Image (cartoon, rainbow, N blue to C red; front, side, top):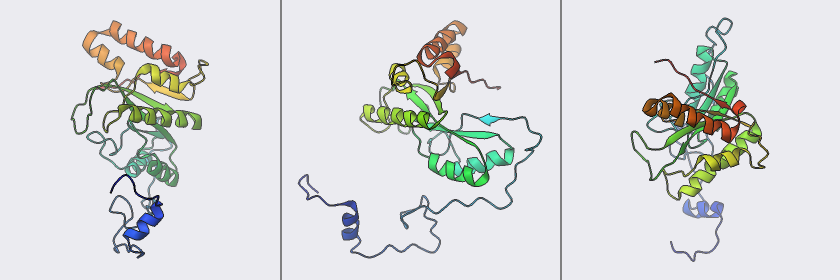
Length: 242
């Protein structure tokens, strides 16, 4: 194909390629991640007899840092499976926070609605990449986890993801820094980043990495930078017990 092709719509393009014949799906095709046997993914159907475990006695807890298999080499479960397991464990809510994208949120939201699970949507963004990280087991860069508190926050997070991917100019290298992210959180520069909750992230987050490599004073400096960028009430430190 050259660059001087006549304008052809995707519908017409598909019709010509298929010679006008409708696609026929095999009897066992589910319309999901298999080849495009159907135009639409089939609706999610929850497993039978899915019940909340200990829903009446469990201490309220919502996991805010969870990756699906859309975070390659990190998450292992489909978004639907995560929603089902959260219900089985009696979680109050679950956040889906895949790396540098919102790839699984539609599937996650559909499944969560069907099983009665409150959802939080977010992403773990990568700062400071110098080259593509496709297939790298321990990629470079620092992580910052952002969850949306409302629809406005989700829209601003979507813009942040798109801005990073476009600025990187090549697959696997989203380009984003803290100043740009802070401006996207508060585009009117009104000092209001309340539509996001920013978490310090995993071991590759700026705060945990500084703590491990240089001690508490360095970690406090990194934490102060996040507070200056987003506001004290919009930053939470992640803690975990090894």
